[in-house]
Image 1 (cartoon, rainbow, N blue to C red):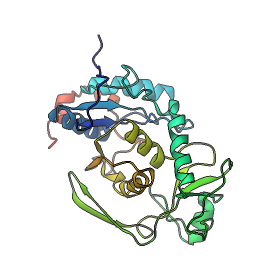
Image 2 (image 1 turned 180 degrees about the vertical axis):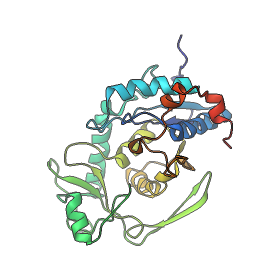
Image 3 (image 1 turned 45 degrees about the vertical axis):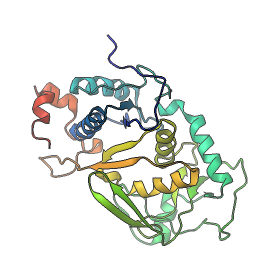
Image 4 (image 1 turned 120 degrees about the vertical axis):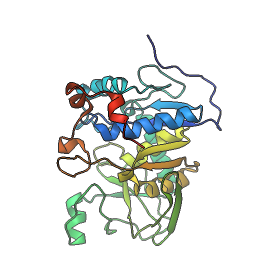
Amino acid sequence: MPFCGYSLLVTPSLYRGRIAPSPTGFLHLGHARTFWIAQERARQAGGTLILRVEDIDSARCKPAFTEALFEDLRWFGLEWDEGPDCGGPFAPYVQSSRRAVYLSALERLREGGFIYPCRCSRRDVLSALGAPHAGDEEPNYPGICRPKESAFVAPPGLTDVHWRFRVPYGQRMTFTDEALGVQTAVSGVDFGDFVVWRRDGVPAYQLAVVADDAAMGITEVVRGADLWLSTFRQLLLYQALGTPPPKFRHTPLLADPATGLRLAKRHDALSLRQLRAQGATPEALRRDWV
């Protein structure tokens, strides 16, 4: 029995939210809470919820994890209106099949002079900074390959290079988070020039998510608070591409009670299937959420 459907008529003012799991491991309770909030926001607004599988990193994404995420999401009670399994007006809903969308966005950025080719590895960047870097955040790029000409437009057809977005230095940026209120960062200080396309031919997260959310008409992005700083990078991309950004709502992260660390796939955190095997129910897991 199908449990999702869609209308070919999309009204710009209608709420459109999304859940966007990446099949690099089994989904955990933190993912479930964020996705549940996204679903409830869409329901309360009488809008549409989209499922998009973010599998552009083929080295880390596995078919078994893709199959598992559908099973786990359904077990938890999540339902979507558009997605890989039920179609929709903005298909395909799998990032590995949307390469043309990302190449088009990349070319627009290149033609506009917003990006430049970079041959630096992560090791080169850390060596130039002269300091170690830990965590998920991309270290501030020291400008080794950054062109000095402000009107620089790279020639087309370059290969074996990263493409970096030229961040305007010292620009104070703000956005109003739907949960956290007004947020502020300074470009070039809190974050630097960032990669939008990798030298192995894979679009980076920042470019892919902006291109997809814009193409799919997403009006609000609900995601974990660990992606808060990425919002400023993405706002610059929306501006460069001439596309209005969605609203953003960042949710608190859950911690593993055994370690105190935030739930993450790489930490072997409690997955939904582990919880299910232990006899947990979705209703019980959601009982203490606020």
